[in-house]
Image (cartoon, rainbow, N blue to C red; front, top):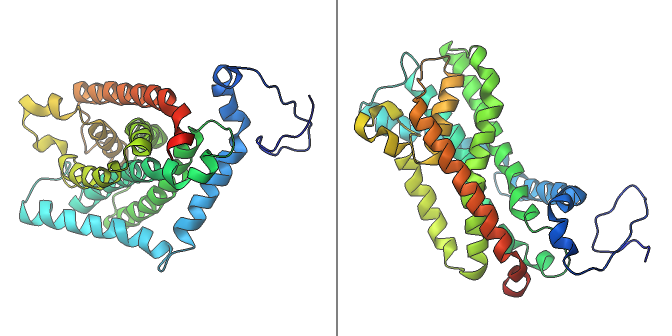
Length: 287
């Protein structure tokens, strides 16, 4: 049967073929992620519009939030606790790099975990790979992190502290942060469909995680005998790596802990995808 079905994304006018066959969507699930890429872009653009256009202070909040985080953490850990910075790097710069990673991680976790419930009308009406919905929130998180990155470069210019060749690894550590957040986010998103009280857990996890992760301090303050255990926090490897590549070597990269973080990131990503796919069929009935 040859037609343009309503449940497929629009294309450049090419004719599409609708094939009704049991199990077809399961077999072609990962290919369908590419087929429905236009839906991904539409959802991402919609979320960006809501984030920055339909708010009282708009983009100003995206600037104020990291600024407040940097100021509070610099005061608490730098002035009050008098914790050391990374080598000769100014303390506010070290905190800003930590805030950059944490902004990206926490935004993905918070936005993706609620994405399925927010898009319940779409999920209940048409077929598409549901993995697109939480994945589209990465674009919003990247926009927020981009604003923090601009603030970081402004502070670097103020302190006369420019990055060196290690900055070429910035995209890799940004990708590591996205993957570190996406695994737990997929778990939370799937659980939030069935157990709505998870929406109360997520803000607590994000608030608590900001203090147990080295956002406002360096990982070097953790005792040596606990360093490897501490590195099982997947955000630790991303923050340490980002500081290594942006603070021109003033930050050291603890390789055993970094590889431990990579292992935890891979485990959560696999677990998140497996659980999400296992429960995906029930989403339309539960949202």
